[in-house]
Image (cartoon, rainbow, N blue to C red; front, side, top):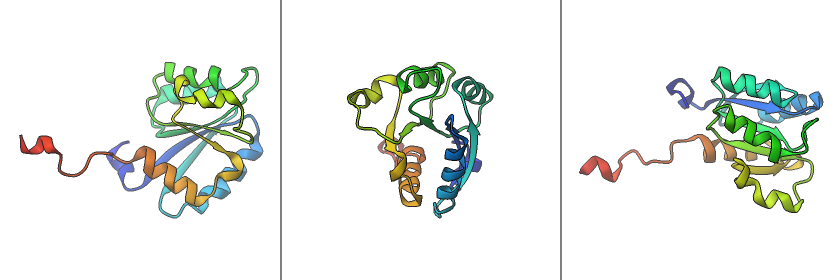
Length: 143
């Protein structure tokens, strides 16, 4: 994350083939009071790869199923292959399938049901996956 974004400014890319999900997530993000979020939206994995290559994205919310791909097992690796190193979260209306148990094997950091997303959850995800995990004083500072 850039130093400009360390003041709780974050750029999230939503990749979902249903434009209504963009509108719904935008409304939910307004209730994420602890963070200033810039939400970008694309409807297909090819466009998402282009955005990733252009840079500036901090986190991706990736719909589980994007036509013509089957599911995140095909799409998430494309984002990693394009050079994205930030957190990728799979969002889906149903995350109960057994294949979701292997989400980390495909370059995914977290999964969440679309019905679970609200301002509180978004704040938690942002804090968990985008803040520097090192303390201000590292033991290496004393070496």
